[in-house]
Length: 411
Ligand code: T4K
Image 1 (tube, helix red, strand yellow):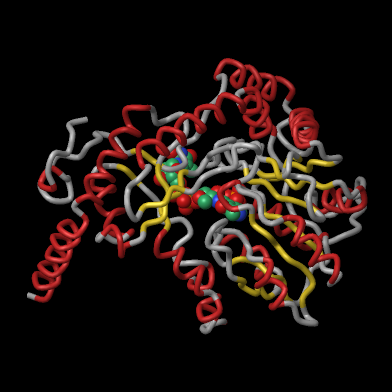
Image 2 (cartoon, helix red, strand yellow):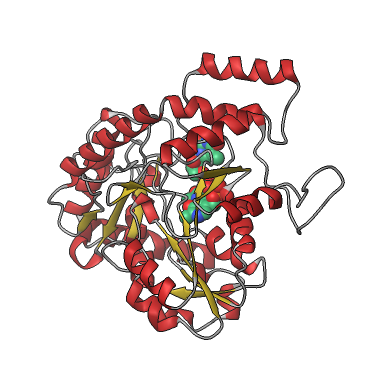
């Protein structure tokens, strides 16, 4: 990559894009291909393609061992896993949930006519603020769904205490937190249940996939039935259920990915450390850090931009990066409460969520994983540093571009 010596070298103005091919957040990590293809052949040979086949069962057992939990129930994705866990826990009425999360967390509730009551987050951790949670509990509240955002655990102890004092169910959306720990214990065994995502964009993927983990035998049994339409034997249905099963092909990917899990984490950790050293001391930019005393998967490189110090807004920086083929993402802008149907149903929710609103305007995530290396990260950081060093000038030129565009469109 040619260094960007001046603002003119930025592709958004007149320079050449830094990268010929796009760099993405969420490019899948792929384990041992030969092993994976071997398992595919095995699936084809046995003709067991789905419905709790041997690979799905082996995958569940391996994940349960890794997490130190009694039960892992593999699913077709985390959204359905959340829906099933919510139903199996008997949640109704209102459930407290952060708005600063992927839309699936809220949808899994609303889909079942449960009101997601959006709660503010702690600006340091980006996770549910337990003090705000407590204030939102009403007689209609039946549960709390905490999200371990970016793989960093919620304040689990405090949330557990609040849930037990108010007799509420506690579910964790651990979509980002596979292979992470909280106070030395693997995430997966907290609350009533936890839900993981193994989507292609996660550092550990099964193409599409997810899982519910729990230490509660009865709950696990119910979830197992619910993921298979509620069947409790041939011709016998005992609950309303759905189709949440993981296919054998996904389980094969999961088993292969498990073998490379440590390598994926190590690559992410190296990338994170490189970003950390290269973005240290950039005024107005805060890189979210991970607790080195805990197990982390380091799958998201998250930065916050304080426009009052950088002179350039988060959205302008994203525009600059996209022009260079660095596809930074504004996860989780604009917050669930500003998306439909919540925006229309709860138009005033934003007023109760000042910290969420602020974060949604400041956060962006950068490419990492096995698809990027030292050269790419160096280039990304150089562009970010250059843009912020000349923040006011970049801002002015982008404002002028927007103004010109407006005039041209009006003509
Ligand atoms: N709870 C939380 C907190 C979550 O973050 C999520 C999902 C869920 C629950 C629900 O989990 P699942 O039901 O999905 O298991 C992505 C993912 O689709 C979603 O799984 C994830 N969170 C969310 C944070 O990100 P998009 O809309 O950003 O995906 P997309 O298609 O823009 O992909 C991101 C980038 O990854 C692309 O720019 C290109 C690259 N990519 C993607 C795919 C799918 C590839 O290179 N190859 C691929 O196969 O939502």
